[in-house]
Each structure stands twice: as structure tokens, then as C-alpha cells.
Amino acid sequence: MSPFLVLPRVLSKPLRWPIDSVRQARHNAYAATAALAVRRAEREDVDNFLSKRAIDVPEPRTERTPIAR
Image (cartoon, rainbow, N blue to C red; front, side, top):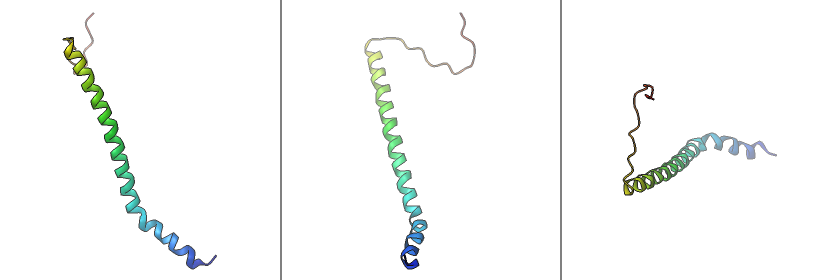
């Protein structure tokens, strides 16, 4: 095989790297956005379910104090 046929392939990979990197980052961002949208929809569904039944849900604790028993 002629080195003149291999050389363009070897040189094109580093030149394509920024484009491929941005494409992969965009794909990762779309996948993360979709996962977050699913979680948000589930959370809103649970909130609607609980609000319709007037169930009191305690607020999450922010302090690391032990629970009194």
C-alpha cells in the first residue's frame, strides 16, 4: 500500500477530533436532558397525586440531627 494513501487517513483523524468531540458532547447533553425530563415528569406526577389526596408530606430535613424517638 502506498504511503500516500495512508497519509490522508492518518492526518484526517486529528483534524476531525474537534468536530467528533463536540458531536459526542452534544449527544451526551441530549441524553442527560432526556433523563432529567423523565425524572421531572415522574416527580410532578407524584406531586399531583399527593396534592389531590391532601396527604401531608414532610419537608426534607436539611440538618444532620438525629430523629427523636
